[in-house]
Length: 370
Image (tube, rainbow, N blue to C red; front, side):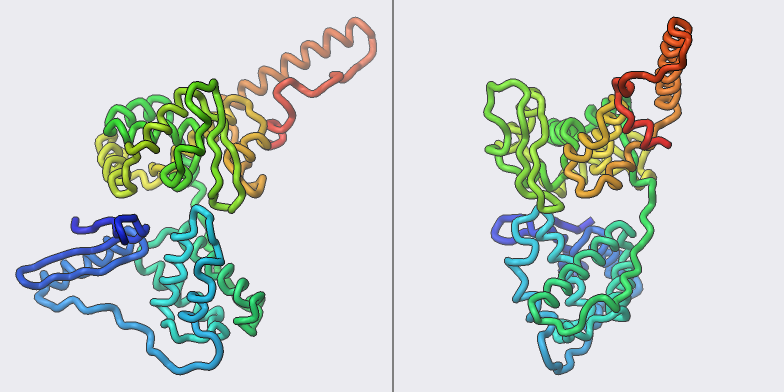
């Protein structure tokens, strides 16, 4: 495969570059996602195999328009909209995709339901997953609403139909302890450290790989905090971290942190060795799900898990409160114990009574499983 992580001035841009050569003929192109790059690589190789000349995809025609164009709108918003949040670069990649699909000369007011659907179809044709398509929709919507508030777009976005995609619930895949042990044994030391930290903290990949060493409490302290200033929802949070995990994270941030490309390569190789190559849900984000699921199993309050993971809405966290059969049996045994205790109290007093307080593990877990 001739796909490389794109860099500018020595720093990763978050895009992917296709570089192919056949004899004296060379082909190079940048893409916003690995899926787009892989699709383009296959297209070019197939064209060469058929003796055809791979041509660039046709661009939208440039037509003179009045008002603020999409290209101008991007210039006006860059450096202001999404500034400083962890997903800033990725969000702008999605808006650049809109620009390439619709043409930079299109008026902001001309971006309607039909235009949005054209963008989504172009992304869908490139094999982009439904969850990612929903992020495209979210970023387009935020971009247009921001310009409406700034007075650069005259038309409200209220009339636009967004066609949100239904995401697969299978995304909530977590690691068993046996899978974790096997995975760590197959990864290079630095990548294994990153996976261990991700499982222990539940942090997102960007939160860990984009962190600075001063975000970790000073060495020599007992269990401390990992302070995350740039997050997906733009709300800072601090995550409890053990001394052992803090040591691993400091080592990663002191020069051992793998690149996104090497992380993907090492993960996919280990995944194949484990016989999970066809498991589309076995991705690095699984580490975050694993942390959350283990907290649920440990009877951590659902509100505490919400704050730990940095979820904006409790509904997002409630996905993890889908208690498994083993967990239900455990709760049933506890409820049975309460009933036995209450029965004893009733026999002593002759009157039915209620517990003076909620069960020690809290009512939240039972409510979530109802």
